Image 1 (cartoon, rainbow, N blue to C red):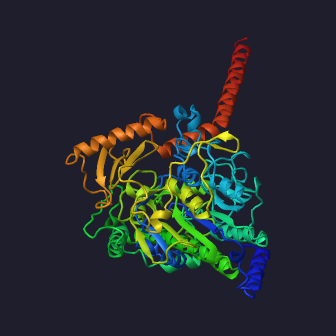
Image 2 (spheres, one colour; image 1 turned 135 degrees about the horizontal axis):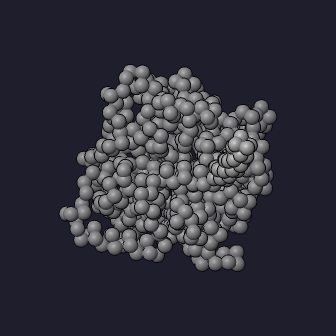
Length: 596
């Protein structure tokens, strides 16, 4: 945060403290809404869900609201965000997968472009048209062209990261698939500070946007999609140091601790079991030095989570000091489960060489700090998703079931857990219900749009309804060949190899959230009916098959080579051919002159 912004925000908070009773809420009956979206946050990373990471801000919100324990989202970021903001299935709204991973065979179809279609309307557009101020600061990942940026999709003030992510310390791409870090502000290329930390910057901007319009009495909708805890996992040193000794026992110990904590909280049944993923390494096979390094990888991750929570707390304090807190509804969730990319050998020569080409290091002493690239790998990712199975990209519960805390104005203050099944397409209908804004049906703004499929969570939150979705209702899902269908307490799921087994399974995810007991043989009739319902979902939403042998990470690399490096490669090939021809001509003339 720049010194100028720090002084400005400090002065605003200081002056506002003299007028605590002059609340904006007093002149406005419609509530403000703050939608906070973490990136790749595991199910049990926060304390309300059994985690050991210090998250006092989220704890406070949870204690004053409702925490959903059976809330599901897509297992990949862009599809989740598209459904979150529109209430429409990802295969219908144009984002069936992250654009970086869509196969060329699928890209031929209009609904497989990986960018938010014009056939849907965002919750921001609906709220803006209803008289709300609408702000966004954070990751967008739903399109890069001017017409697709959030500034053109209902947000009146924005600071947006258009890609899958970025470095958290500087305006720098974190992967070589991007030429630059695509930050934009209010629809134009942003001039980023020379020195910043992403979680701090995004809250600074959110406070700035809110304060700039605080005098007109209009309510606001603030969307804060953090970069935390997406790759690269980075955190200020003071946050990391609090966890240096926390993870020395390894991922198996942590996973068991979180399972026991979740059972004590009543988040999962006391007799439920936990799946051991075959991608989890044997902690005892590592040397003491390697264990020390792995423990710090997770310490940085924990520090990044706590840093995000700390800055959420700054926003809460600002709203309290300006009299807006009591009239604000908070929604806190994650776009998908924990990230397992990279591996459990981050210090090998090849990895370090690749990081060096991007001006990154992963030395122990500076891990997580500026210039450092960090990740937690599949073993600690399984612990972050505990007591669930799988993680990001996969349709197991660890990839799809994430925290959801709803708190604030109109939400019962009884610190309860809600066990109703809920889905990401329910968030927009809930926000509209809270704000009293009607959802459009088939037309909006003079054009046809796709209707929302989600349902408001408010009746279940207020105790007026037992369930959000009727137990007979079927909700289908597919991204990158991994697929599922939910119906009541049951779920059928298919995960691609080599992490999955390329087979359908049936689980009771209420009694068996760890997906350890396959019921497809003992409940064959239900299994077949649910498979038939998935086929209906697939046909209705025009779900395309992935090519044989599809692998998401490999496809990202192939697409990057095709789009970024193919022209250079072709130029090099043509240049080499020209040089070869010139050489052959020269060689021919030289031989003739020699023979003559």
